[in-house]
Image (cartoon, rainbow, N blue to C red; front, side, top):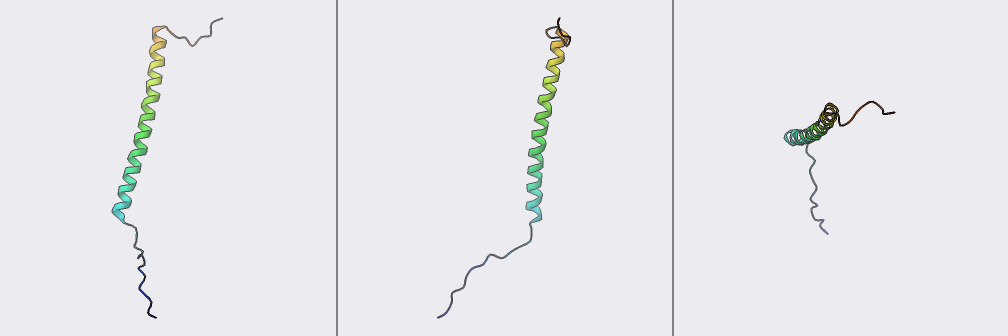
Length: 63
């Protein structure tokens, strides 16, 4: 009985270009999320100070 050939996957080293692309995409995604968070916090602070300046809110507790 003759055994048939079994196709085995050959292991290759990491693809540098693929690793760079994956790192770039992940870095840009994380940076974009951080920037969106930062803009949201800036908007909250700006709104707070605008309301404070207009006198609609106060940081002094009313007695």
